View 1: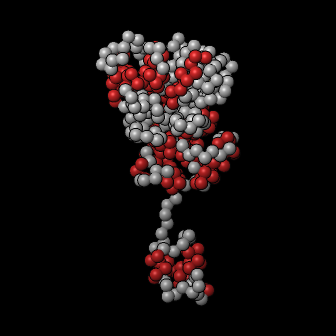
View 2: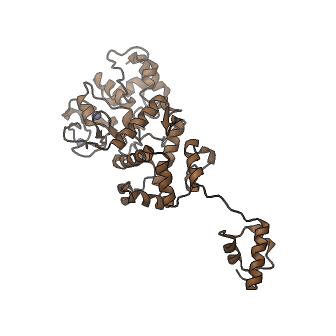
View 3: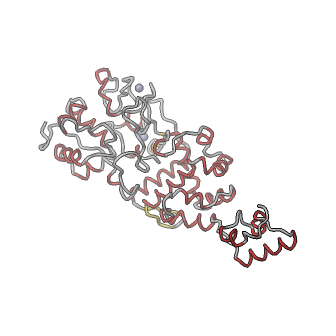
Length: 392
Ligand SMILES: [Zn+2]
Ligand SMILES: [Zn+2]
């Protein structure tokens, strides 16, 4: 198979099709096993489908696809996540997690993480079934066309989709197409009886808002236009707060009292990244975020205040620098939740010390701190009164 001329059979990527799905369809259309197709197109050891080709597609893979299928480079690159740099995340890391893109897990593990979801109704209605790039966005948990929750596993045998393994059992496939074929049980993934209907308009509306934000590059929140990248960055900080049990128990209790995040809180997961959570938990988180953003920032601030949750916890999420917190999130939290640091003046300390010596005849560190309304005395004060302190 030539690498610099058009292939005889060369279907183009379909609307919003993801790269791995397109490669599988190309191999299928040419009557080749996936492995043989990759070997003939990119040579031995190219390891095209090992790892996460949708995220980490090398330039030579895309270039060959462009030349040999006659698709435009834009069509080819749109099957990857590269066009979302600067809108959904700052950059694509060479490996590991990428913000907001579902994690496929380790290829060598039998039970890979269930990162590739799909809508069975969409696949069934497609003239040519294919996987959408949208289905790998961590905030996408429903199909907005069919108003059903996406699923990530075969409805017959519960196997996660391993698109790179589909042709291991293709001789026995029932569905007649590699995309709808389950690589483990060989049955059709798109049977009619699956997919939970989503009645929750908050969830559907919020997902629609986020998809629109990604498409347009900005979003209007409470009358203010916000750049998409900054919005998604701040949103992920809020998600991380919800997932960090060590610091946010009080806040989580507040959500629980409102009947939100019940599964996340009652069935704690060890997973700390939105991108690797099961779709049911991601859906619950998105529903909660949708509720918060129906009246931003009032519901969030109200809940934080009620649960005595200060802004310093939020800013801890930034990890490196307070400047990492986007302004749209920093402004209301700083304004309403910041507990100002109080440092008594020398005059205040002197008069408090005088008072204690006069009334009690001795000076104790703990009592001085208490009377000044601080949790503990700073080093300077401790040194200044070192000779006068009696016990602690
Ligand atoms: Zn659908
Ligand atoms: Zn199956």
